[in-house]
Image 1 (cartoon, rainbow, N blue to C red):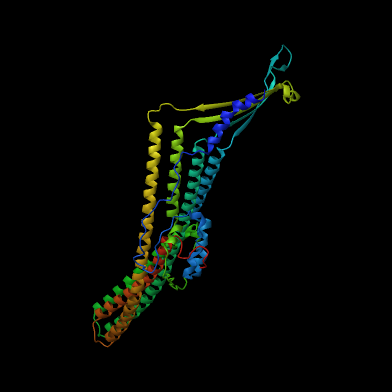
Image 2: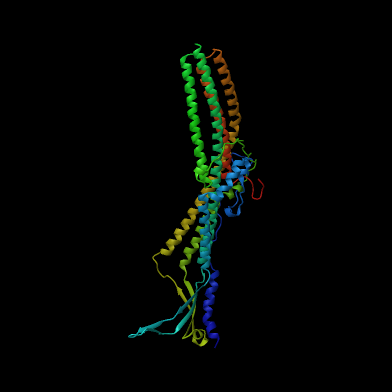
Length: 476
């Protein structure tokens, strides 16, 4: 007598065993074209390896390569206070919660119900009376949809890939904010240096104006010389004021990056070392794997691939297993009595016979979305190599320019001093002095701007490499 239920349950058990079958395509990391090497750094290897999720790669405090105490104090505040990073953190938490939600669908659901109905009446001159109109009922129901074709597992895989992509987006937001902070900080320090250059120039031009006024009073110089000296001084003073405004804007931008209101934030002027970290001779392309955008693009491909399995599962029947137990009685003790308990087991299956090609269209759409994600991934990789090449080229070019700019500045300073001495002796007109002063100040400013450009190019190269040129675990 006990074999009949087992025989009836056998088909259900067989269907449950099918839960190991999956209809989704196996995921493989898309291949990309492998360049023979970096054009701008022939000694650097460029052999490409499959991308790894960004959340397992440690980037470290790359900004310490510049040896600037002010930057070292500011950069860690980005992760704590920057609101764009905070939004990315919340998005990552949301993605993690979605993974847990998708995984919960793999388990049975269990519900508990209780009912107790009463009715009453109110007599003339009497209070209301209540009486139970039916028995108390306590029910327990369970249902489970076996993942016969891997639809639920594909959903979990897609959610996991989405969470990893969200982690990469978080890393991208953090790296972008840190790079923006470093770039603005170095621009601010360069502005401080130019303010110092302009302040010195104003002092020098004021002395030159006094000399010109003395010579004009003595009848040696012309009135036009005085006017030229006044014009030169006023123009430089205006440039000094404009540079002060530019510095203020940079300070405000840094305040926002560290999550502070500009009104309560200030960076005091400090000596500018203008240190530029040396790029190592070998830059393996494996470092590009830590680029958050590459990791996010690769995880997007994995998520799109999982959606193909979800769409394909609609071709096959769905099965739901259910069980319920209900106890009834007039009292709590009666509810718990075995003789008052009813139970049931059930199974239901559903299969779409005709849908006008809707399922096929969804599968095709999911496949096209996966192909689109693959194209985006490959383009992201190519763009990453292009960004590294650009910054390597800029780094090399700017390093070559520095020596020439420095020599030009020194020569212009000497020419300015010679022109001023010759003017004092009446050997040259004052226009010669003005031209020499303009050239010398422009050369100093060009050298200052070049040093900031070298630092910013190093920051951009670090960002292009995903957060530095050190391998995971390697000390800075």
